[in-house]
Amino acid sequence: MNNLLERLRDGTILVADGAMGTMLFERGLRSGECPEAMNLTRPSVLEDIAGLYLDAGADIIQTNTFGGSPLKLASYSLADEAHLINSNAVLAVKRAVAGKAHVSASCGPCGKILKPYGDTEPELVYESFEIQMKAFFESGCDVICIETMMDLREMLLAIRAAKEKAPGIPVMATMTYDATPKGFFTIMGDTIEKASRELEEAGADVIGSNCGNGIENMIRIAREYRKYTTLPIIIQSNAGLPVIKDGTLVYPESPEFMASMAKELVDAGVSIIGGCCGTGPEHIRAIKNAISPAGLR
Amino acid sequence: MELLDRISENLQNGFDETVVQLTEDAVEKQIPPEEILSDGLIVGMNIVGEKFKNHDIFLPDVLLAARAMNGAMEILKPLLIKEGIPVRGKVVIGSVKDDLHDIGKNLVAILLKGAGFEVIDLGNDVPAEKFISAAKEENAHVIGMSALLTTTMPVMKKVVDLAKDEGLFGKVKIIVGGAPVSKEYALEIGADAYSYDGANAVETVESFFPANSR
Image (cartoon, rainbow over all chains, first blue to last red; front, top):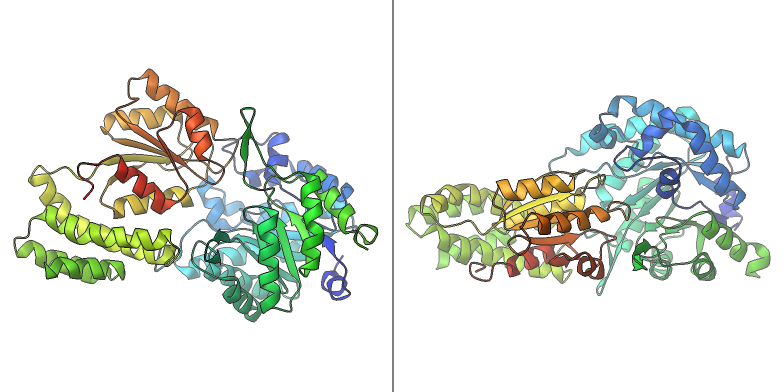
């Protein structure tokens, strides 16, 4: 399925999937293990998860490759397996969706702080992303989603690597912002205005935000993006920050609540709505129902 | 003292080489090292922390200031030890077992070091027992724990419980943080404190040391 950008241009509102980590834990990932190692050992699990989100109505299904850049995999001594880890994940989702949804290859932060503030050479980070992007391209993903970035410089390196190694594949670029009394900032101090400008200049095709602290903040973030960009906007919110309920930790935002807010996201100009931490197939199903043509108009 | 003001100002601007140079100058001028620390470096670091808390500056500025602080501490630390003056306090820090997120924890470690504390970084995926044994071996004053997953947060409770069993409770302060962690959770498990970000973690750890915090 490779008409994602066309569909967005036509004004279609698309739904992306929800969280991956919790689904993996429910299927045998032990805490402490590398989540992406499952791509080598049990790719069928990835197909199951993709199938659940497909059934829930997701138009875009993400791969289990958030921590799949060699720099990140190195903390599990898996850097050398990067190509296979990333391509296995893309192939698994492709098998599961069989052309019924767009396969979105997820790319998260490398886990290092770039010089001069940290100790990691930007060039090293770029090369690490190149390896991941090459695997995405060769395994045939439909779109690349670079997400949860908190340093715009790292995001730009990843976009550059994607454009270089995965030519012609659309890139979605989502940053994670903190809500402060002075507005939204990434932890590195990047504003939505600055991100809009630089992401667009770098060639991102869809821009937006993921994770964060609750879907209501995401509505404000989306409105601010809309002020500065004409690109399609993607929002993948978490289900709020976890709270303790009867001694266990739960994410507070229910499928119904997030679905009711999804309509406001559409009004704010968002084209793709998905979930992040704390969301599951039920959230995606509810969001899909809320924004389907019948639910919207 | 003008020299110490310059140390503070340059530290705030993140000019690490200048801060190191000025610290050497101050030592040469026989300014007591504890005074260089408290009236120069820590004054500057406190201002940085305050601005960070108010979102007037961001992580990059703090990282540069902390680097300057660390550079100066390399010079001062041997002098302080020689004079028998305790470094501000010792903190054992780590991300709890099964949690491999460490950016937040690393940041807190950098900021604590930057604020003049001695930091023993146990890394990530740290079992409860290791926090306790390290705190004992190092005679630490504080145990700092980070968790970024709801699934790993129970390790924090285990550390608190172990600290009680091992007679550390009350002697070693326990502070917790990380995205899913809250003040309520800290209270519930019996930790001494919760911090919502790096700057707040430094403030909180400082509050454990009322006598030598300035």
